[in-house]
Image (cartoon, rainbow, N blue to C red):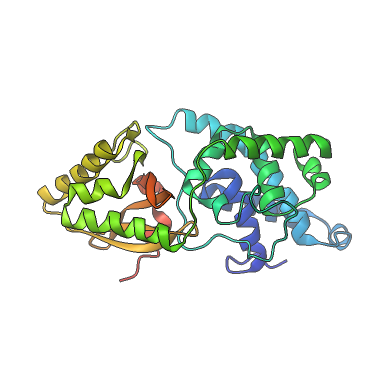
Length: 303
């Protein structure tokens, strides 16, 4: 089985593990553990496995399920607000994965890796999260999911249904359409020009901004809520950086399959900013500044 990082097999497994765990590094560790278990099989046992990728998907999913308990405990003691680790570009699998649900109900590929949804999925139980992702996104039958989570197929169907209902109880954010791009562009232009009123007009009245510094960067440790409060908060960050003579450079890039902002000073990425848009207005902003969550960006930064 080909598990190089650019192979279809690796991208699919990473797509599964990242959606379950919300961390690229933890996802990579889960895949490595799955690869070790594959290597530990005898040649005769491997020959009996008709679909190695399906076998690895089940193994990696089970490893992730086991990790969820410990990762949740770590996040409860996290310094400040925990946000998922952002990943440059797109996160597989490809769009050929089939689904049996009505598109209006199913959690879509792009939606399933949005910062807003990954954060919302933290409220689900481990079983609900795994069942939802494997069924809605990867089209695994409930019989197979049952083998992973240790439940009956009908119980897994109920887990996915409960998870879907809980997720859908919140706002449904727009994907990368023209309206979303215009909202992000309006936000960026207002920040560049320092126009507070223009910035407020790009924000939903109940907009929420969450900042993740991981205790290593001084950021707000509680959500900032409301258009005026968020606008002044964002302008304040820019003002502090400018007062210290730091020239911040921002550029649009794909973040978890969506257009967002990558902010750097010199050749160092200092923040990745993701947006959730509803009805053409920015409803949620995620600012990731924890250096441990930006290693994928500092190593891929173009000159």
